[in-house]
Length: 205
Image 1 (cartoon, rainbow, N blue to C red):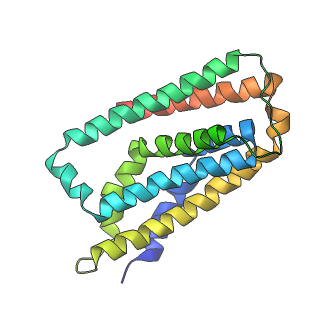
Image 2: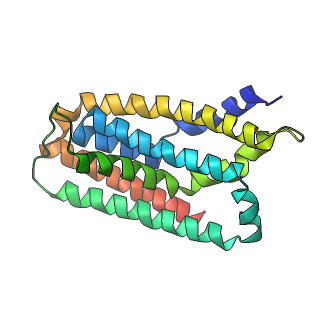
């Protein structure tokens, strides 16, 4: 039997701790409304699903044989987080207004929200470590590994979707106030600094 409650107890603090995915969901929802935030959350959790599938089909074992893959993943993740942070700082320096409407965003903007969420989580070494190292520890010896791994993946994604959706709606409710002028620039500056700080932290670990 899977130790589901133990897994939830360990996973909940990790999900609720603000990280790169939370920052990107909040930033996109403030810039483009709740729908943009929800699409970003969709991208974030699609990356989680990918890691769940990789764990299920033995990628964790492959990493033990080729540890350099982990190093490459970490370096790419650091570079991507730093790039996101620098983009936010550049936007913080701009004085243009970001329009937020109730209408559905163009397909290009929807794709941008999904892809930014996906790439942020896929290149997040902390998420990779969770799926490839932590999650397998909760699968008892003798249990069907593939089914157990996908069950734990579904639990984690369900928790993360609820958390990200909360931030998406919170950001969307503040979108019209914070999408222009000094509030927008302050938000972009704080987000940029936070993302760069995360990149530095991940790079030094």
